[in-house]
Every structure is written in C-alpha cells, then in structure tokens.
Length: 394
Ligand SMILES: Nc1ncnc2c1ncn2[C@@H]1O[C@H](COP(=O)(O)OP(=O)(O)O)[C@@H](O)[C@H]1O
Ligand SMILES: CC(=O)OP(=O)(O)O
Ligand SMILES: [Mg+2]
Image (cartoon, rainbow, N blue to C red; front, side):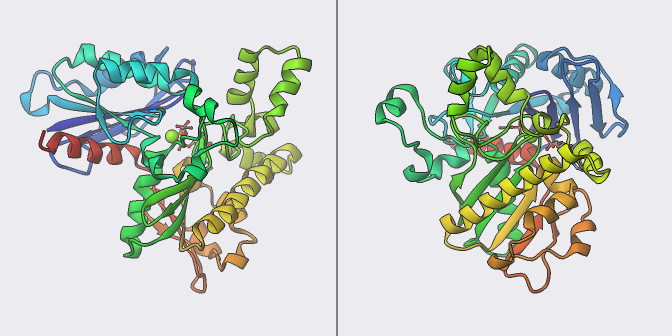
C-alpha cells in the first residue's frame, strides 16, 4: 500500500511517501513560508536543492508537491492508496488515529478557534485530497491524542467546573505525535520501557512533555498551543491579566491581541527574529536583545525540566528534538547548565559533534540522566498509526 503522509504546519507542508510496509520513505520534502514570496520547496528523492515556488495557501502547496513528484495515477504500482494527515487540535474526543468522514471534518473545523494557526491548513489539505484521490481513505492523526493519558490534576485549570463542561476549557497539549515518537525511540535505544523521561520538542512551536513508562503525565501547552515555553512567535506562560490590561489600555481589539500573542511575541517579540539561527548569530555578535531572548528561552525550558522531574519523581532521560533541539548545541548546553543537582551532565564534545538525522547521546560518562538528541519524525509516526488502523480487523 502506497501511503502519502502530509504534515501541515502553520506556514509549511511536510510530506513523505511510503511504499508497502516500508519505514524508509521513497521521498520526503517540505514546502515552507507558504503564502509569502519566499516560498521554497525542498525535496529529497529527486534532488536536495530547495527551489523557489509559488503557494498562496496549503491547498496550492499540495498541488506544488504533486506537480513535482506525481500522483502515480498512470502506474497502478505507484498509485497513492491512503493518506495520513497530522491534525494539531482534536479536542478530547479523538484518542487515536481516525478515518476522516464528514463528522471528523466538522470537528476539525469547530476546533479552528483553538488552533487558528494550524487546523485551517490541515482542513484545506484534507479537502484538496478528497478531490484528488476520491477513493483513498484519509486518516487524521491528532497531536492531542498522546496527552489523553494525563491525570485530571494536570489537564484541569483552576477555574469553575462549568467552564470545562460548557466551554471545553481544559489543557489538551500538542506535539503529541512527536513526543510519542521520541519517547519510543529513547526507550528502544536505552533498552528500558520504565523510563521517567522529559521530551523537549523545540521547533517553531515548542513544548515539553513529562512521560512515565511511555505515557504522558504532563505537558506545557494548554487549551491552545500558546501556553508553556517561549517559542518563535509565541510567548508561552504569562499572567492572563496581561490580556485584560491590554484590552483596556492599548487600543488593540481582541483579534489584534490574539495576532500579537500568536505571531508577534516569543523570540520575535523579544528581539525581532523568530528564527533561532538568526537569534544565535546576533547573540554571538553581542546583540543584547538577542542574548536576553536566548536567556528567557532556555531558562523557561530549564524550569519545566525541574518541575517535571518533581512531577515524575525522578528523571532517567532528557530528549531534545525538532529544528532547534536537533541543530542548536548552544541552546542544549544553556538549557542543561546548572542541572547538576539532578545529576544531569552534558559532555561538551559530544554535544557539538551531533550528526544531523542520527540519534545521539550527549551526556557525560558520569551523568545520572541520559541526554539524547533524537530526530523528529512525525511523518513516520503518522504512517505507523495509519497502517495500524487500516490493518486492524473491523
Ligand atoms: N542549524 C540550526 N541552528 C539553530 N536553529 C535551527 C537550525 N536549523 C533550524 N533551526 C531552527 O528550528 C526552528 C524550526 O524548527 P522545525 O522543527 O523545522 O519547525 P516547525 O516544524 O515547527 O515548523 C527555527 O527556529 C529554526 O531557526
Ligand atoms: C502545535 C504546534 O505548535 O505546532 P508547530 O510547532 O508545528 O507550530
Ligand atoms: Mg513542527
């Protein structure tokens, strides 16, 4: 069964095509900066050079992918038989991979206000696929599902019960596909299923998850992907009174405040650059606002590691994954500095020698906690879950 996996991010579309049963994709790629004139398509399998492309939205990005790699329509052996989608917000209803029908589609649409940067892109891609591949089942895999194992004390807010019952106000957690994937890789690598583990997914969006024996027990994102760590354009934890204060005194309306807090805060708000590569380069050159942004970013992560070690009652492993987690040794070093009291020590030489795309231990010999850099692979995790669903007996 040829399986296409599509991962619609806020401004990107990642994809991988898997042949029958294989875990190595025939090809993979990424279209980024969708909707801007800096849109690029990087495709591994034809050649690796990113090419400029035009994609005004996610549906157009999918057309660009298929124009370059083909639909396999003319060759039955290459025909796409099923499509897996990453969907960021599934509320509390979807506990596992789910075949998309009209009711699933409406649920994804209803949740747009809780994931305004993400659910619209997934929905657009699902609808485009239905027109292009009417006979192929489409399966949604939700970022929220992994966190359904959280105990109620971790997913409730301290607000009246009616806000949860009537308005769904609770913590859902995101990046679950990625946290679940790296937790399994870490358990396999260390040969232990009973790990107390903290997973750090540090991409454009960023979150931490506390995982005990493979099950999530807490996570840093909440009702929406805005809570928790400092991110590229989102500031994470903040007193909610900031919003009342600004609504009364700044002249901005609620929609403008939402845009400010989702797309103009975090690293971008602090120093003007959302891209960690730029922040690091500027900090290196002595730029004070970039240094401060980096300090806030790493300090917030360190606080979560301490909190989650307490929630877990110990710590066996710490995992770094996604764009920043995999590629920024300086960020990893800064996060781990001062965690000696947890017996967590990083080996500087191993930390800087990490090979992209490979699982790499970076802890020192005398560390009591394993520190691992693990490549994010949400698409492979989606492919596994889709196959499991399609192979299950009805
Ligand atoms: N070599 C690098 N050094 C530091 N940061 C990097 C590097 N490569 C990518 N990043 C950062 O990774 C982030 C994007 O991560 P990624 O996982 O691709 O994001 P997403 O999937 O959320 O769009 C950006 O902030 C980018 O600057
Ligand atoms: C949930 C979320 O923030 O996703 P991303 O990191 O892809 O923006
Ligand atoms: Mg991502």
